[in-house]
Image (cartoon, rainbow, N blue to C red; front, top):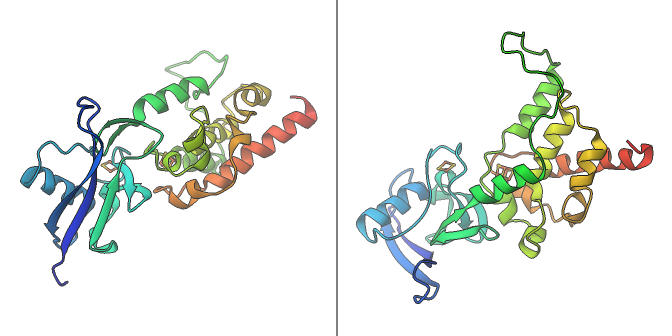
Length: 243
Ligand code: SF4
Ligand code: FES
């Protein structure tokens, strides 16, 4: 592979020093074989600017920390190879989430708040028996739950979503996916009408305007529009049957 000199145009702003206005800063780096944006950003921080802020934990598309706008599209920096990009690469923080600084955003507060708002846990009257046998579940149901559980909370679907960018109360594809997960799970004894009260509004299922960016950009390739359609179908049944 011919060696390229890459130019990174990176958003810089630290809310702790508001007197320095937001700006784009250019860095140059020689590309190496198999270079990911994770490697590039670490080299820039180590060799050129130790104040550059960005998040990484796993480096393996597992923790969801490294979501950012890569040439304007949300994606995981640890999973993105520079060889798949041009010589000029623009990096911006994910919109919607609170900016910590430069490319670092706080997705944790957002996800924690919505976990509570949508009551994203199994609701059951059964008392937990630590010595009891594991409950059996048929394979297709377990598979559908697993599919939804693959979400790594990276926030890419939220950053990509036109509705989430326009209204901060929209729960977004990640949480519609989570709602689907609990609707599928037979252990959750909540009546579907209860869930409808939480998501059957413009802040929930009816806020989506169907641009499908979430579905296109989810790094885990979760079929988000399919999950949304499932929740809408369930909600329609609740409306028809009243339960
Ligand atoms: Fe990230 Fe996909 Fe989960 Fe959205 S649904 S937070 S894009 S893994
Ligand atoms: Fe964990 Fe990228 S560093 S997903």
